[in-house]
Image (tube, rainbow, N blue to C red; front, side, top):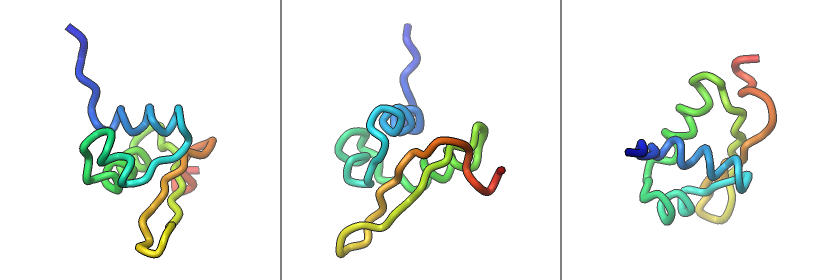
Length: 75
């Protein structure tokens, strides 16, 4: 029996395949309303993924982009 993927694993796989994700993407694909918490976990646990956040649109929602290397707080 195959192990069910966690939302964290799904978000990471999406970032690796497509490069960036927004909270709306995460909600529509994974039914996750806690994308910020998932990104925080990916940044602050090994292997410390380098994920950049940038505000977009009038509402100021975030777009998270996976960058090469490790998160700057851990270099």
